[in-house]
Length: 130
Ligand SMILES: [Zn+2]
Image (cartoon, rainbow, N blue to C red; front, side, top):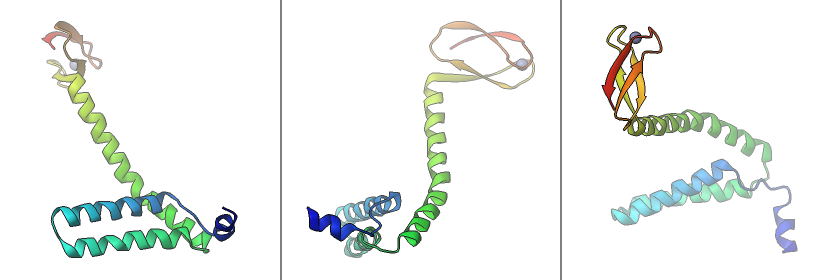
């Protein structure tokens, strides 16, 4: 494997952006063959080639900058998804009740039977079935 490490010396290698390109290429390949769209299959070569180009690139700084840009772009998307997942989990485990006095929403765990809820804002108490 000596020739390989020699070959890779000074080259950029893999990073998150290359991985994302690889995944994108695979998704396009699958979609292309699933819906029998030839141009989608051809299009899927593009991220693969780009990924290979980046791995073997000697312009390490530029590739690193690209990866940083990708991170800045990807971060809000990732956050949005994790928030969505959080909310879905919340909806499964909690119920939301409006406080009869100050009308704010109070989060209460589900399936606890009839419980007395104390509003965290105005301390009003009310009984609900969860
Ligand atoms: Zn209240």
